[in-house]
Image (cartoon, rainbow, N blue to C red):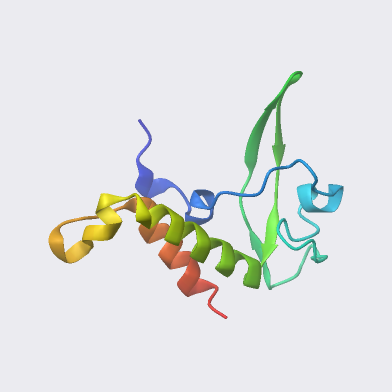
Length: 114
């Protein structure tokens, strides 16, 4: 079993389906959410990590990136949706509750705050 403390925060962030994404969005030269072009050396781009996918012909990887605004909003939306069903998030640290995913999404929101 993988130690969840070793998972980078961005990998907890669910991404939109590849269906309907442009080639630029899948390659990481455009934001995976809004489609805004991102230069390869753009300091405002957020590397969302390698994502592995399965196809009829085997596996392949994508290397999506997002703009800071979209990463913030995605983390906020996913944290709210996740916390509704997560006992650890609802109880909070003060009551002994803890949730690795919730903390990771909260850190992403803080790091990419508008």
